[in-house]
Amino acid sequence: MSTLASRSRSALTGLHSAATQATHSIAAILERVDWLVLPMLAFGVSRLVIFIAALLGDTFLITEEGHWVADPNSPFLSFWAKWDSQWYVQIARDGYWFQPLQQSNVAFFPLYPLYMRLVARFVGGNLILSGFLVSNIALLLALIYLYRLTVLELGDRPSAQRAVFYAAFFPTAFFFNAVYTESLFFLLTIGTMYHARHQQWLAAAVFGLLAAATRNLGILMWAMVMWEWLRHNGWRITQAYRLSAWRNLWNGLRRHWFELLIIAAIPLGLLLYMVFLSSNFGRPFAFVEVQAAWNRQNIGPIAVLARDIGKLMEPQVARWYFTSMLNVGAFFFALALVPFIWHKLGEGYAIYVLLLLLVPMTSSTQSVIRYVLPIFP
Image (cartoon, rainbow, N blue to C red; front, side):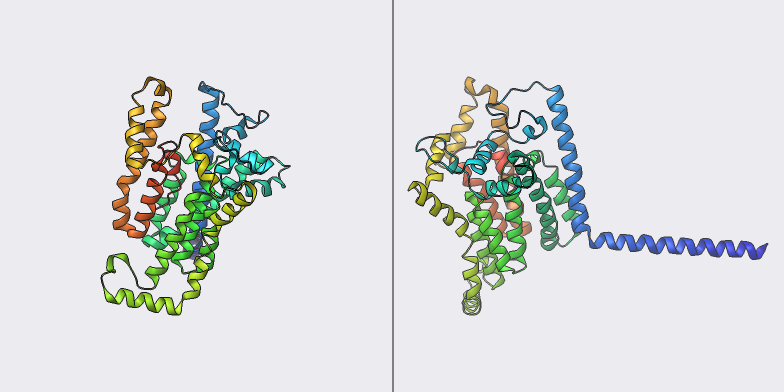
């Protein structure tokens, strides 16, 4: 009897030991692939929540029919194709056109509609569906890059997990689903910095070039990669008064000049689009000229804030009051984070965020709550 009990205890001990080892092994595997598992989890849960919210809103809230219905046969796809989505669909379907002093699709950069057209070949030519897929695939990849970049910058996984979930569940993260450039720009800017931080200059240049072909502000990635190259070669703006910093820079230029040639490819994303506009319409800056048709005039951030805040008091703006307040509030909220970004991540990220905030604000506060969404630091 005692022998049987002893054997039972030994068997239970063995099972417990095996279970413990298996648990540790699974935990170790999950820890090695958490850069993939956590972003996928955040992506899946957040998109499910947003889909449910969209369906509930469409069912129970009174909605106003927009001036453009994306797909009358698919209300679900129409959720994600509003306002500027029509321009991207038009470019992907018909190409570019330009009419001076009128709203023209040359205002919208070519990479996103190009991807829409390519993916549409695999989904029966449905450009709304292809845009939806491009946006969501780009978001998933962006969250993976965000996780890995956060681990690199802050050195701990909990911070990376929080960063990914904050991005996925941000109040305006539903724009990541839309037929808009937010997800793609998010992916390309994060990817640029991730590869630059690893001194993978060719990959950084490719991502940066594509970012510059996605939005006009993508050209800022050239400055960001250059900043990282300078830092890697021992030059920092906070040490510019030291002779040693300039000596390091000279040595870097002599030894790694070819890397600068690679980085110089980033502006080609914008320049090639300008060449296209020049050859087809004779106006390389057509994308800037048409901004006036949307009542966007470069008068400076302070003047824009004074003008748009003043407009909130006008009766005809009442229907847009809440949206306008959100845009102004989003600007000040993001601006208040810049000093903390400088302290935590350095001057490079802080200046990048500041420029991404201030450049659109030179003409209007419209859509600021959307523009802050892909500002990853």
